[in-house]
Image (cartoon, rainbow, N blue to C red; front, side, top):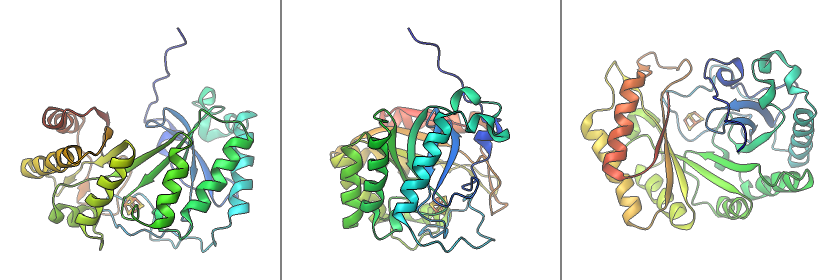
Length: 292
Ligand code: SF4
């Protein structure tokens, strides 16, 4: 039996501080992630901060403009190679941000497409995945997961579908956002011009092909948690996905962890989030992991 897994605390600086800038790197950044259970190398395909959602809880600072860097794949590959080698050699462990968790900084748990915007908005998502897969193979990291963290709006694009196939063939996981059960609540929380129906269709088509993780952020709006009828509708959407042949590996239920752009969007308490998770389990039979 190996050592017990280390409990990752959300009070650690390396967990709290998810800034996407590390040294002078443009496309990659290191974080300690509770959901990844250790070191996650983020791949930021959107230093320009482009997103097709405008979530009320978005932690990306949109008051300052993004960096207008064109997506440069050789540079992405070089930066990723450098950062992985730096972490493996113990470089991150010497950085003040990681000094509470040096033992977690040498093993890359995952390489996650997640950044200052929505990764599937780039026109060549498949080429981006190919670049990362090549680095992963060259550095011999078969156990590092490839993760796409997505709002699901672009999962129906041809280049994204090709990218998903490449990821699925190489230990890939798809973590897809679903925060609402109705179009009205989706508009309130995610504030996207993309129709809710398209998000649901994309989730279904992806989940019919591969098991997906659903990531759901629950919050208070003007002091009120998710209304019971909205939670019921959310569970109905999950059950419809399952009944139509979609495979859902698990739900990640979480709440706000960092300051939001909207003061009326606030964090749930631990018991409130746990109560929502219990309802989802009871109504869908799915595994729900809570990150409060
Ligand atoms: S999808 Fe992500 S990056 Fe886009 S607005 Fe929402 S939280 Fe921010």
